[in-house]
Image 1 (cartoon, rainbow, N blue to C red):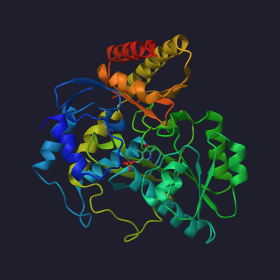
Image 2: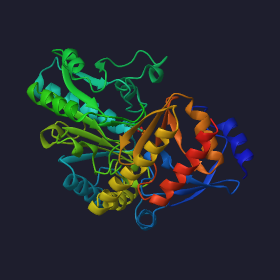
Image 3: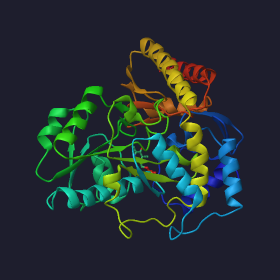
Length: 396
Ligand SMILES: *Cc1c(COP(=O)(O)O)cnc(C)c1O
């Protein structure tokens, strides 16, 4: 099918929930994708931080091929070898003790919210249910996750929303302290906000939040769905802050492109889920688990992570060069290979022009250009992307 045929059929049969670009992607390899007309693009969107290993990483493809021919799915009524191996790997590489598997970031956060409430009922008291989240956060699209997401545009016309959430400005410890009530049971946040504009938590703020949670017996929940699994140059973003969450959620990059989410927790917290309390038919099925084991094994490698951090700094320098050159760029933000450019002009025309020149980027909100390339890119790819941005920005 050509692009127009795909678009026509999609507009007739697929619900209109995405502001899609008029292009259809049909093939990917490493940091590149091809559209239905045969045009090649350098992909700095990477499936929204899913394709951290690039497209069709040979190790992930091999794991999927092998597992698909052996056993794709059985229920969680039975033990599944690839799932337990993956859980062991995640636990050994993180500060958490137990894992629950699901299929998306929203579902992982939904599980985190349920687990926090179960813990609160068991250990803190019947009145403890409220979760404080951060303005500009993004936690997913299910009803509880969208309520945790403190951005009115995502909640519009969905009321009544589930009660028990309260919002404070990001990086504002005083506001957080003032927002605590006798009902508070947890604080939930992304160490690096993705969808909300690539906002990095301050070191001091994170230290104080962690201490506050310890002092007041509150659970600390980190949503590392986007910033986790190597994206920032450490396996988990919280490692930059010398703090540990009680609960952490993952998804996006975890299975190299196969849908999967995960909810991790400290032993005492995890123990609040007993048989029958939570479940997911597909969660951690053999196919997704095999893909994830292959992907996480690479993402968790120390020298791989060191390279990501180095490439992040290199890219940041290039973005600062653009900032010095163009007055409409207000700031460079992010960590590792989740980077953003704050701009005072509309982002979409810039992203569109980049696409015409063979570079895929996207904007979050209207005034932040976001870069979440595969972590496997080279400095040459960064140079190319910078050159395209420079060319596009000269014309503004
Ligand atoms: C993408 C994202 C989610 C939602 O993940 P889905 O798989 O789309 O449900 C949740 N939290 C963060 C931080 C995200 O970036």
